[in-house]
Image 1 (cartoon, rainbow, N blue to C red):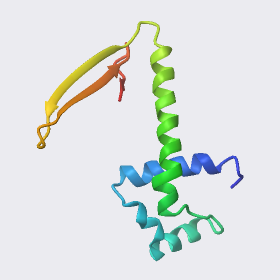
Image 2: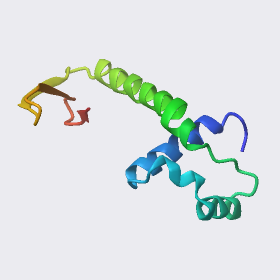
Image 3: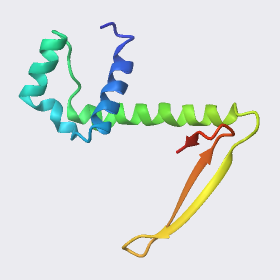
Length: 107
């Protein structure tokens, strides 16, 4: 894997981890390491601190930039939907979702 591929690999790795509900510490499991070593010898997996820190921040920033670009490029504009609720601590919370003219939610 080239150094240019590393950021994409890390982003895909984070998305796989989150979508499967895995804890970030699963990368330190010996069976996980053995599987990835078998699939791609020499591949170095990021540690849990890198996943929960640098990789998570970079991926979130990239996602936010993509959402902004998608909203800005919608020729018909976006619709904002708002919802409010109170949590168990009696704190008032607001949720906002933007929806493109094609029906794509931008969360």
